[in-house]
Length: 119
Image (tube, rainbow, N blue to C red; front, side, top):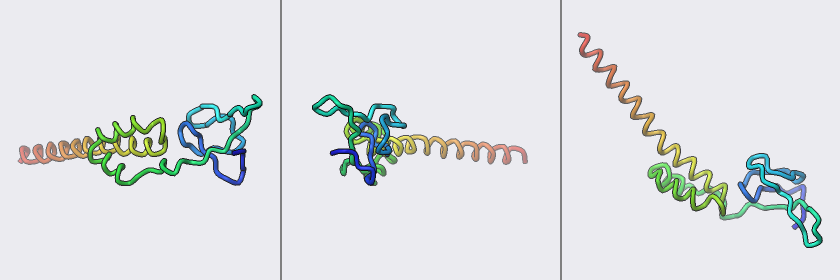
């Protein structure tokens, strides 16, 4: 396909939205130029993969079981960049959120203990 300025274009490497006149991706920095059979550079329209849409069930699974999210991120990073970023993000949130909640509970119990000993 040739460049079509009316359609959104996506980086084939990371899935970020790019303009039709871009030669490199602003997110990953990789070249968007392709070479046709004559050896001339051309900017090609890359539609997003239909399978590369973030999936809510996988995101929820990654939140509750972050190890699964990290594995899915590693497996999908080359073929489905948008889906892998979403799963990786939810895996990170699923790992960090319990740590923050646990830390808040420790501070709360420590303050309650201090108040009970001061009486």
